[in-house]
Amino acid sequence: MDKPEAQQQQERPTLTFDFNGNGVPDYKEPWFWSGAWEGFSWLVKTFAKPHTLAYRAVVEAEKYRAAALAGQH
Image (cartoon, rainbow, N blue to C red; front, side, top):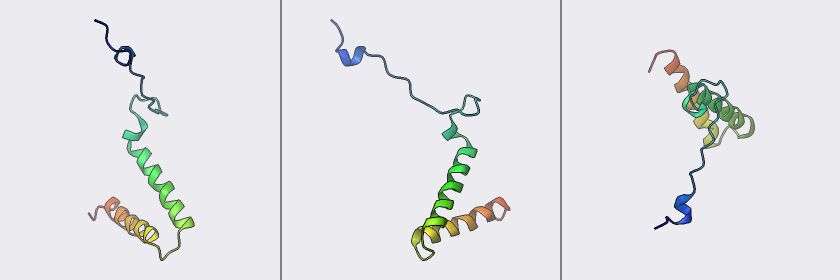
């Protein structure tokens, strides 16, 4: 007996971005998330008011990140 048409279709390949061509999807590489964080924090610090929760959270996260990179955490 034939399988239903939905099961006969092959699955589509997923689109993964690999800009540096090393075979690892970009979202699995640290430089991708580092750049995403820099962009996000720039947007928040540019467009959010300093009294907002988002602005304060970014400032605190940057302090924590700087301490972690300096080896204090």
